[in-house]
Amino acid sequence: MGSELVAYVIVERVHDKPLTRLTNVKYDFKKAYGLQISCHVAWLGVEKARGELYGDHSVSFDQLHWYSDAVMEYNPRSYINLDFDEHNTRLFNRLFISFKACMDGFNHCCPLLFLDGTFLKGRFKGNLLVVTGKDGNLGLFPVAFAIVDSENAANWAWFLQNLANVVDRDRNLTFVSDRHVGIIESLPTIFQSAHHAFCMQHLQRNLKDNMKYVNKLYRIGLVSKLRECAYAPTVADFNEKIEAFI
Image: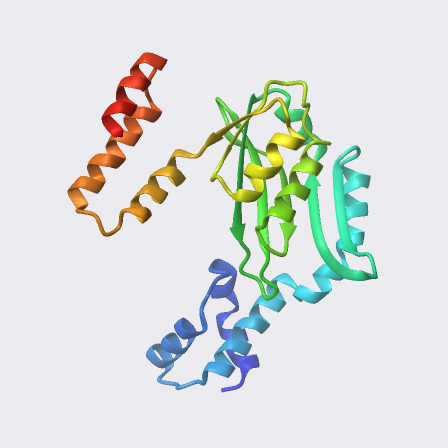
């Protein structure tokens, strides 16, 4: 079994499940065909199937200049910052994009912005940084995103500096984040009049993680009290709840 034949057999599966693992491919070939294929052949087969479906990752980076020009041509007045190494214009660093429709659409949403980052699963890894708004009817509304090498303080500062060119800073903005140190350090200097709230999901998760060796029932009780504090409708009620929490 060569990798070309493996790719031919699994291409539809990779189309439906882009994160197909080589271990699953090995198992399926053994179960369906009684064939034992090596990890290397399975991995090459998955990579070739992905390449046939989505193109080569290296080539896609080479097309970023073309893509940026196409966005500005077909989505006039969008905002793009394509950052390359200053000593080598072919070495990609970071990319920030906010489409004009997203910029205009956010002006009709609540002045509430959610910041978060996640890992990318491609060959070159990296992170996706995103900011979304909140619309009462449509739910989350995409405002801007960026591709960076990692989620660190420098990249969050760069992301927020670009975001300042996209959103109206005269609005009474409130940001919600997971308390990443890069956001906490950069937000007050770039959006000086904005409010900064912390994501309840992350606060609960951090509380659980920091108390993982504590009695389970006691831990559940503390998380419940934390929620009561967060959802207190008045200052007086919050002060009462926080006393019980402490």
